[in-house]
Length: 423
Image (cartoon, rainbow, N blue to C red):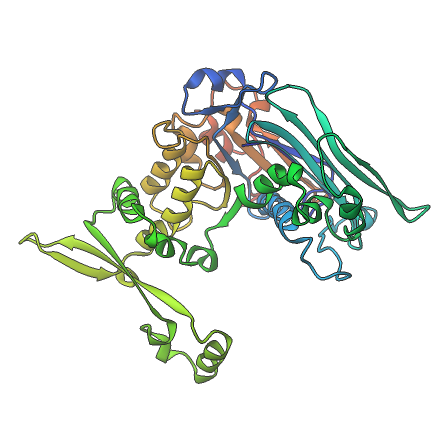
């Protein structure tokens, strides 16, 4: 579970900004669907959902990109080509900040341990990196490692916990490149004591976009080989008011799929050369006619909203089943408002969300705040100031009794984070 995420000097963000999933006392009392129990006395309850509002260009996507950068860099820095540099994106609209490093930090819980992990990076190297852990069994914080670059000597100052990190510690250090993370490198070299933190950051902290390129990745169809998956998808769609009785998924060669012959010859030849064994999935929905006979309709002929829900079904079911934290940009894009609200309600239903999965999403649809599953501390605003630097503002900073008045006040500009439209 994500507890907190901080970013400094990345894209729209200049000064350090912190996004928190810690539940306040009012939300803790609201019911079991709003919060997950952590087992840690210092942070007993964590939110299962949070929504982020802001005008176009305010910095919402910069926050998600920062989260994605951290997860991706943990996952791939060991494998990246040496010397190619780190793809940092500092704040551009101030001459001093353009040359400053960027900082990322996450506090999270995984396998009964509370972790605090972060790093500071410039284009040419990692300048700092740290990992602290607090197991539930002891309740005591321990420093697993720290690493800091000393420019005067062109070396790193290391501190590695020899008690809790067993193995070839000197080898892990020497094989960690300047432009790679120690966490990523050491785990690839079998540092068992670091696998928990790596597992959550690289595999359980997921970013998802509603763009057509991401949405039509085929994940839902590929999972149909799993037992009970088809029925789970049917139940998901039926609960979102998409009426159907069966789904058929057929795998076939990409080059025999409908529409492939319509592609230009050059593209056909390129695809065949790149992956001669490429496959695709043909999906059909079945509904019953007046004689109760099943009649198929290709997914390609369904409405755009139905197609979006089918492609979204797989990732959402995967997140709920495994207790992942998922961050979705413009989650309601292409969805009917009722389908969008149903999707939100799944994460605050303790019968469905049994593993404390978390959903963090950006949206312009303020009606979601009228639902009982969204409280004050689950609403965040992103506002870009006159100096073009974005800031994160929790709605709980504003003095209102609950989240219900948010929609009207937000659209009136009472809380900022709305477009400045001149008449």
